[in-house]
Image (cartoon, rainbow, N blue to C red):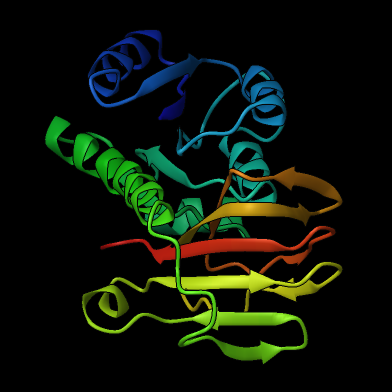
Length: 223
């Protein structure tokens, strides 16, 4: 599990990094340009960024925008008022907000929410769904399986795409993680073979395509 922390206050960055490192591997950076470079090369279970950051781009807005475009979860850690960061980030939205000053317990709980989502998806991926029973045709070449019981309350869903199928993830009404278990998925022109983790926010759902076919499992973010 990996977390990217972007904070230009060196002492705060070091302190936050030390705490988060007890939960996950941490990349801690103090400049926007450095963070954008890393985001182009790596994927993270969570990105934590301040709004007012020096070192290129438009501060934290650049980080949030990059995270949204690459379908990675991003949380804003900032002393800015809600109206200020909403205005600065529009039309992009963070997936969570932690207002400075904050309690350490609040930060660790926020990080745990996103790590737990990925961990649960990894566990669900080991439980292959039935080949035929329960699947419904949602669109040409697209089948979905919504388990009953506790799994339904979790927002658990399996998606199966036939080779050559294009699909917009319109069934998600909130934030959710998606794990590609088999095949491949092309997002924004980039082909991602399994296993591949992506995060769907409240922004318009992405258009995706699969060349070889795809089996994926999705789960709603708790809280």
